[in-house]
Image (cartoon, rainbow, N blue to C red):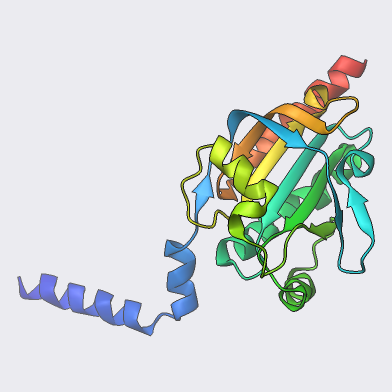
Length: 204
């Protein structure tokens, strides 16, 4: 019994000496699996930090798989998720995978700091700043349709197959895959590989 108590004490001491960031990294992730979702994803044109607009349909023309990544620059889960997304984008962008980041509820300065820290290789535009009402964004509407019950709901990921992209009009796609949280890297990579390969086979 004394040996068991001693072991517990040593374990507690070890935890107390761990950096708080290490502990947080183990308990604060918010992963979510991809699920097929019916919603009308709208085409959009949102400005980037330099004021230049980016249009979803134009930026993803002829791409095989598209990820629209909604995030908040101050959100710790978004700061975790960007690492995974940046890695996947760099690995598969030359095979037809495109990512468009859409920043929500963040100031321009917060976004600049986010970009400086993580150096995302994909383009990022801004739907709303820190003064925009939460319920006024397309992001909020998509979350409701996906039955995402989180309060703020970032990050929120939407993957769209090329076969499901509408050729024209205000609606970009009606059938998508959503993840109401951070992407699970292994699951997301498997999905990306399957879709890129499937699209290649269809075109042969």
